[in-house]
Image (cartoon, rainbow, N blue to C red; front, side):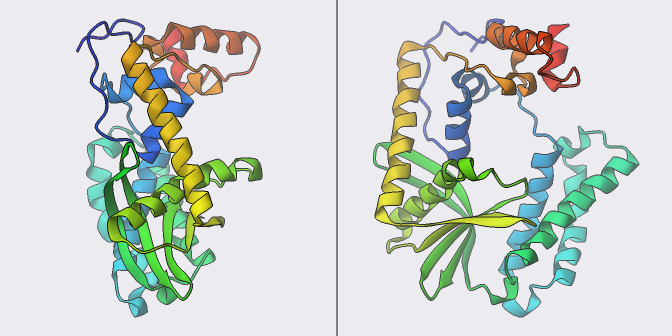
Length: 285
């Protein structure tokens, strides 16, 4: 499948086999970027923050898989040390070419996120039903695929949780972020039967954002998922994936394939609204 300089492709397109929370979010941010990543399969290497998050998730997965009496900070430290050599040797982390002081900062970021779980809850007091659950299920008309970090049993019912190693959103944006775990709750119900009580985003070291998984809340999240799926199918029918320009253009890995994105960056640069150190600036040279 060939790609023109601005990301357009005259050949017929095949609709995606599924939609995940992350791909749905990317499509909402910018349909052009979605196409370049998921249809054209152009590389979109993860940054240091995303890669650090994968190590945090791996350590917490192993920790919560231990018996309750072993879920200690010292055990977490041991697991992090065991996981670090393989993580550091991965092609993605190696590609970062971190200097010695950057490695120390990277490892400190990882440990702060891991230890941050204890600021939100005591892992030894959690009744874990499952971790890293792959949910591949039909939600209405949408083939849904996602990986749920954790499912707990509580007196009030099942709780689904997703770890976040970044900063929590401002209050006005929290509801949008909660759609992810509401969809996980819907997928868990569809896969395992029964009901769920709550869905949580655990911003490690900061705070948790929670929502009751009422039928109304889940139906709302499903409705928004269906809207995105219908819009995505419409893009495939027309073979037009219009870019949605804005501040994120300066951080997009595909600016070389998007004339509109380059124009937006130049406009923001002329207005003093974007740093010359932004990754996409190199595509303007």
